[in-house]
Image (cartoon, rainbow, N blue to C red; front, side, top):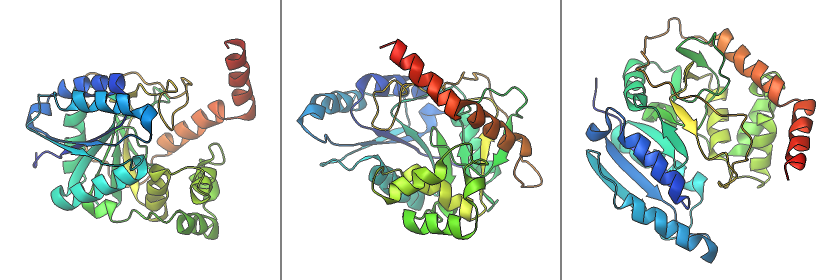
Length: 300
């Protein structure tokens, strides 16, 4: 194994989530050998201040890593600016990074898998992203597969791939439309990723992730994804800035080592793409969303 990739953890104002994320990460088999960078955003307003201070108290008392470096923002940067700056800075310095946010619980072999994958595909230019969360719970998926899709719940990349990141959402949106790729980008129209990008352009969201997804998609660069989840998102409880409270994306942590065997040839997996397409078709249809709204109203 090459030098272990540094871990970038982005935190803000959720102390309980942050504590759970750090405890799980510290229990990873390679934690004590890994450098951890923690980017702590500042309060947006007075209402955030107490929670932000509690988070900062937690991160200043964490142990169990080879080295810990804390970057405390003096003003509120927001998640997108924070992640773009942090990933750019650390990929330039280290060549590769593993990225987590403050609501992601990792399995014990998450770091092992991510580092193995970063090593295995380090010189493969058509693979630019590694993603360790799997929420379709489709039993026919292989342990790993390649797909043109970049999830943001526990991921890793290299400096060579991050150089493709284009923050200009308008350019990305125009290119998707010009090349007639929006239908494919949206998993055959089953999930509105193009609309998400358009809303970013319109200033209605500030998603870095949709721009990263589109950047690699337009460059025909694949992600290595897992068929067994090594990450569980615990922030889908309405507590986050961009999180709802549905259980659509819950996952079951796989607690055993997940082997990385290089896939040849480097082509997108039909099984992987069909799995996500069918999942979105089941969960994002008009009737599926209507039923969820009705259930929420009943439970009010």
